[in-house]
Image 1: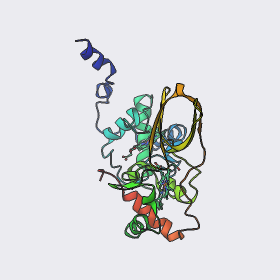
Image 2: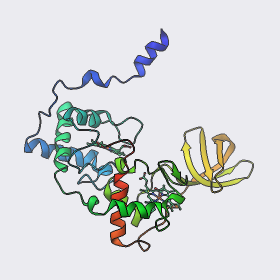
Image 3: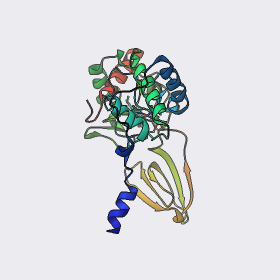
Image 4: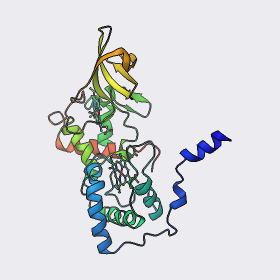
Length: 256
Ligand code: HEC
Ligand code: HEC
């Protein structure tokens, strides 16, 4: 009985206060302008001012893969996407609709990420010219020093992907940061930080060995601001960067 009650308490019941209409009732040009203001304040930091700039998913597409209907879009904007970086927002229903109207309008602007050739990009990324599999996994092959790229196209915008190739230190992901810990016994270990919570921390060192620490065993933890991801600015041509971005955008896990 009590576990069942607790389950109900911790289960956010999103469907309970979903609006009763399927179609966005707030789509006038004033609504879109108000939505843009809200978007600039709350969403542009991750998605970029034009929807394709930041480290959020690309919103400047004609059809959003997870928000084909207005109600699906409403639900994502209001409640976020669980277990991803996409947060919930506490806004009045009218404001959620207005942001949604603005988000839809982003899809009508041209998408600069798609100008490359994904087939060429694939050869580059999987082959030695890019050498990306040294550190990244795509589907089941590749390394583990960096995050898997299997669904990167669903998660990130073309702008972020392009910057990641040209200037990798500019937008470093929170996961897969380099960290150095010194234990109270005096051992120093550097590796990729996989997880950290208030009590523990997990690292994978460069010889692929996992280390798990309770924080009270540690004298210091230093999470670094540099990244091991190399810049491809001088290693690939502009056209090759476009091809690589186009290929990365096509990697969408199970999404269409
Ligand atoms: C902290 C960063 C962050 C903020 C703030 C943020 N988003 Fe997101 N958003 C993301 C990420 C990351 C994803 C992709 C999640 C994934 O698949 O891993 C995403 C996904 C989405 C999607 C799904 C797109 C699809 O694939 O169909 C929509 C729509 C969206 N965001 C809209 C918004 C709106 C509107 C706001 C402001 C109210 C907002 N986001 C605020 C990071 C953010
Ligand atoms: C020497 C290792 C290494 C190589 C080689 C490498 N990367 Fe990375 N990459 C990383 C690490 C570590 C991260 C995570 C930390 C960060 O954001 O910089 C990362 C992050 C990324 C991200 C951002 C992921 C996100 O969630 O936003 C993308 C995209 C990416 N790499 C693509 C590539 C591509 C494409 C190539 C080949 C052209 C490549 N990487 C080559 C180590 C590498």
